[in-house]
Image (cartoon, rainbow, N blue to C red):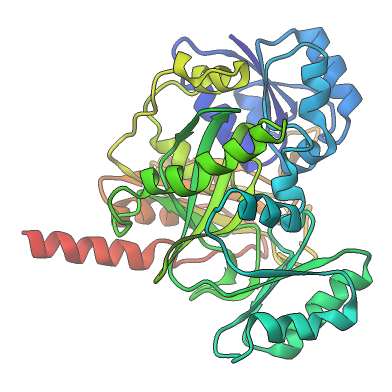
Length: 431
C-alpha cells in the first residue's frame, strides 16, 4: 500500500514509524517530512500549508491513503481538497475540524450531544473578560481557565490562580483580533484518548497522559506537551467504554446528523473529576506527544485501520491490539520554549541515545547540506522508552535524553514519575 503523510513534526514521525512496522511494509511518502522521517519515507518538498501542492503531489504519487497529521491544514480544508480530487483521506473536513479550530463551536456541539464538559462563556470583548471570570468562578476558590478560541498549538491556554493574569491573557488574545472561552476549572487527573472514526462508527485506542507545563512539578507556562506515558495503571476499569458511550459516539453522531461526518481521529482530552468524566477539549488529529507512546504500544496493523476509517467502514479493519509493555516519552525542548525558541544549534548523540534501547522521534529538526542535524523548533526531539513497567520505560527514556547533546536544551525529569511510583507500590503490596 502506498501512503502519503502530510506533516513535518514529531507526531508525523511517530505515525510514519508505526506505519513502517506494518507487514507488509507500505510504500511511504511524506510532505514535507523531516530528517527523521526521511530515514523511513520518501520526503517531498511541499509545505504543510500548500494545499494546492499537496493535491498535485497526490495526483503524481496516486497513493491509496493520505494521512493529514497537523491541525492547521485540516482546519484550512486539506482533507476536503484531497477528497474532492478522489483520494481516500484520513482526516476530518474543515467543517468537522472546527471541533479543534473553534472551542466555542465545540462547546455548542457538546451541548447538543449532551456530552459532559466544563461550563464555559465565550468572550469577544476585552471588557467582558473579568465579568465572565466572576460568573464562572465566583468564589475564586479554584484556578481560572482562559483559552484562546482558535488554534494555538497548545499554548493558548492559561490556568492560573492569579485573577490579573487571567484577565490580561484574555484581553491580550482579544486585542490581537481573537476571542476567548472562559471555562470552569475541572479537578482530577487528565487523560488523553484517541478515537478513530469512519464518520459513523468509533474505535478507541489506548489512553495516555501528557504533561503540558514546561517545568517539573507542573510549573511554568503551558506548552504543546513535554512528555507522556501509557498505559495508565490508575485509570478506572472500563474508561474507554465510558468515554465511547458518553463522549465520542454522541459527538460523532451529532456531527453526522448535521451532515458533517467526522472521518479521522477525535482526540478526547478528559478530566476524571469527582463528578465523573468531563471533556477538557477536543482535537481533530493525533495529539503530540501522546501519539509517540500510544503507537509504540499498538500491536495490530496501523495502516489498514486508518484506511478502513478513510473508506468509511471500520468493520473492515482488525480491532486494535496492544503490547503489555509500558511506553514513556520525554521531550527535549530548545532553550526559550514555549516562548521564542533558540534554533540552529547542532544536535549530537542520537546514536548513543538509541544504544540505550530508546528510540528518538524528531519533531523540530533540520539537516544542513553536509548532514549536520540542527534544532529547528521549540520541541526538538521526543525520546521514547519502553519496558515491562513504567519505571523501566521512564528510566530508558531519560537515559536516552541524557545521551543527546543540544546546547541550551531542557527536559522534564518527572514525566510519569508519580505513576511509576504508584505502580511500584501496588506491585509491592500484591507481592
